[in-house]
Amino acid sequence: MTAPALVSPKVRSSRGWTARQNDAVIGGVLALVALLGLFPFLFILVGSFKTQAQLTQSYWLPAFPLHFENYAVAWEQIRGYTLNSFFVGAVTSLAILSLGTVSGFVFARYRFPGRNFFFSSIIILLAVPGIINLVPLFILMRSLHLIDTLWALIIPYTVGNLYTTVYLMRNAVTGIGEEIFEAALLDGASGPQIYGRIALPLIFPTMGTVIITTLTGVWNEYLWALLVINDPAKRTIGTGLQFFTNQLTTDYGPLFAGYLLASLPLLILFAFASKYFVAGLQAGGTKQ
Amino acid sequence: MNEPSSLARSGPKATPRPVKRRTLERTLASWPLYLALLPTLALLAVFAYWPTVQGVLESLFSSTVQDARVFVGFENYRTLFQDVTFWKGFVNAIWYFLFGITVGWFVPFVIAELLVSLSNPRLEYALRTLLILPIAFPAAVFAFVWSFLYDPNDGVFNTFLNNVGLGGLAHNWLGDPHTALGSLMMVGFPLILISSGGGLPFLLILVGLQNIPRDILDAAAIDGCSRVRRVFAIDLPLLGTQFGLLTMLALIGLTQAGSITLLLATNGGPAFSTTTPVVWLVQSGISAGNFGYGVAMGTVLFAISIVLSLSYQGLPRLLGRLVNRRTR
Image (cartoon, rainbow over all chains, first blue to last red):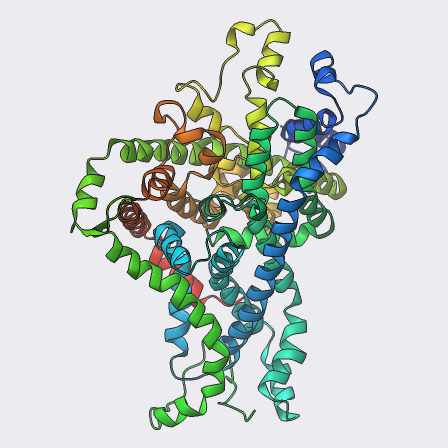
């Protein structure tokens, strides 16, 4: 190694390589890793256009003609699951956002008897693993006659995400800063006005994160849906795909097409909001 | 609506004003606030707190499909401690945990280090996006795609092995008790290992590395610190928070693992080789209709997870941080 010259590591690495050479080597390695990670999905993408015979003949490479009808067959099957997941996701997001922003706002901006008690009693749920409530919640849903309805999914998903959201929203409102609220107060704005006109627009990014976390959560959830939904018409993506997989065990083309169609909403979300997507995952990491 | 109570003058850190007097009056005057919180609190009370209490009571009963509920005291707990399958599942969960904190951290760490070593920001952005793209696939799709890769007849692994003349290594990956657990752990290799938190370890480590202040790195470079030395002298020590959080999550995961098993390996896999406590809870507690036993398992798992968290000293710290932290 040469004498430590005063050059930034950005320009010259310790081995004397230029930054460009450095990038080429590291970039190559990382591209290989990325390809390895994406390979299974590329494989099913290629396979989703094949018939069973084409898959046998040309396992690794694309085969022509492309069979787009696989997608029609698959969509016929998973349309219901997708729509159910959309409905559950939309209602859950709406419920979480309306409840979460109001509570977060109240906890952040007001001082009242019992504030700390109520806030702690919500926050402590962050540390309680969901497993303890699995069976009791099932019994509760059964006695409320909600089994085999989408409400059996919506209510627990809402509750499960609510305390994280209250916490995130309180932090977001606290982070806005004092002056703007005091100014509004001096101008004679009421509590609901301050909430609706000032707080809500300013915590919009946090709301984006919460929506994405909720939607991915709903799209990914499997265990609970398996327990409370038996009715084929009420299946969501997770349980629906399992049924779909067991049905089409030997017909890979439509099966792969179905997997891709079921992934499409999350992929689109990722394409347009990958920043929120990643932030949401990281926020979700503190939840579990 | 009249102004309920004074807007907090400053953040939560401000000293509370000395108003001990007329608490009742203030409570009454704050009614709109309680009204605003009521839906949230009611929902959490009914669907989060009440089930927990109800559940612990339920664990003292035996209720199978045929029999009516019978009070059995601590019988469910006694059965549980002798339940071989439950503890077998727990051992499997420990394997998940060990895999998660070794391979599940090492690979993301190396890749994150390589990523922050790139000097071209566009290249970095493109590769980062491609690397985390698999997290955009739903967990179920992820699992089923991998289960296809493992398929003994048409799967990618066996086809590949046959094509390159290593057909002798071809395997019924998920069907053989010796390879089933390992195969489940590897789902998502290299970066998005589903069994160890999906993309989370990578994202947390990457953010940690990106947040290391530029001047520290510049100072180290001036002092002649090599790239490899930087990993041990600067990066790892400064990633303490991230690894702390990941440890916490791995410990919590120890009692919660199992979704992937339920998706891919029927009934906890061949000879219970891939079962976890959660899988067994679902099978013997819910599917078999013995709710009391299921709740007893949930309660024990909860207790184990609390003990683990406390012994890690994580819970008080985590709670303290959550309550006190202000954004930025």
